[in-house]
Image (cartoon, rainbow, N blue to C red; front, top):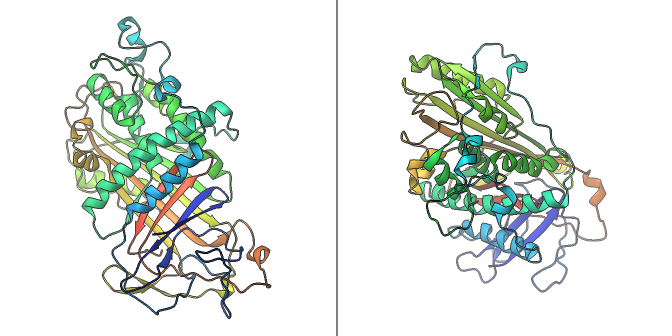
Length: 465
């Protein structure tokens, strides 16, 4: 198996070559192509020449013809692409001085060995009362937007790189669990969004629940006392995650994030929790809902999410229980652009072969997926982190608060548009290069400064909206 790694604009995009049955040479399956203006070469580095082929075709229409005709594809080893990417990341970071994560994100001089200082992280009894859901929605009611930092200092880059390693590892573990549950369907998740969700829950947790979440996040002080878990600065972590996302949103790509907290009537949020989680998303919505009528509550909640997500997230919550205390949801929406734009006049719709051997016509990709974090943690044998016995006394004014659902949605869109016009990369001196992504594939979107995986997915049944 061969692999190739390109760099284009904000992201790294990878390509993986999968062998075919009875083929002497591997036929490439490409995903996440960058600029293809370079003259293509074969495995020996010799130029590949083609005639009568267009070199400006979009995502699912790029072709590369190989000798031997069409052959059946073997089952994809999709997780291999992730390891390939991590291999390149490790090479890129091999010359960096190691810094223990706890040294970067410890909460000052507060530790479990200084119990007199623990009152600094206890509930402050200053409460925030959520507003009820109203239509039409008034955008001024939202909890606010974080101030995005466009500049990344050397210290911030170190913090971001350390966090990237932690969230990448956790994201791949969760991808593996989703892959076991869903052997042949689409999988799409955002490791950075899930990591931020866990940190947000940590900021509302206390005692053993906080310690367990901190261990899952991977930022624990090295100590001989197994019962000692010094706290970390979750607010600082969320701000660092926000600085990782910031350069993406300021590029030609479009990135937006949102978070929703729906609380039962009479439940109020700790003011400290609201302030410390301010940097988790671009837009945060805190709403009061009467869950005693679950069908009505489900309609109100889903309608509100649809409106505030620009209709990108629909029918999110299902099967709401009348005893619900809190519903949590987040959305990570990325609309990516190619390094070079494609000539729309030269593109045409072609078939995409799905895993069930059927074919569909697909002009571009718009993929949406939802991950149930509670279910993933159960599969990882960590159900106690968000079950009914979890301690979230730093989150609200209610004792024994239950976090009933934690959902993470991802929306990924790709079209023919690019950050530069397609004419900029025309080279008439060489035969154009053509690829075709017409079969199930794996893709990874990586922020180039920190190497953080923003999005990871396997597409077997592409969607078009």
